Image 1 (cartoon, rainbow, N blue to C red):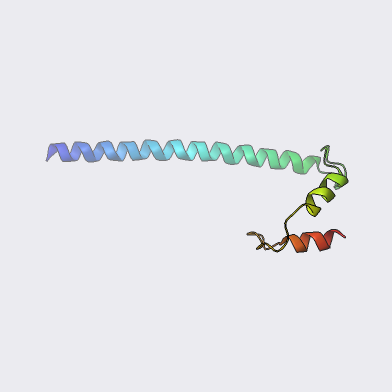
Image 2 (spheres, rainbow, N blue to C red):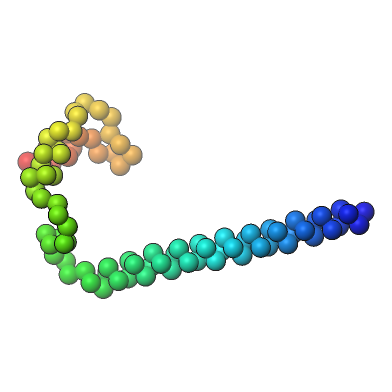
Length: 88
């Protein structure tokens, strides 16, 4: 009987440690993401044409025209035809 009680206590201690570790890790990730979002939100100026990236209109146009047509849409419900016709 004593062995069962000790084993049960060990399982509870392990579970509590695991829960604390996971909670601290998740809390750290959430705080990091929230901090990143807040920083980007503060610096947002509404100018979507200048984001500091190297994406060119020609590159986007080329990628859209190279997409296969007649395929099923993805999880977002957009098919190649939606994107192609919206682009013109």
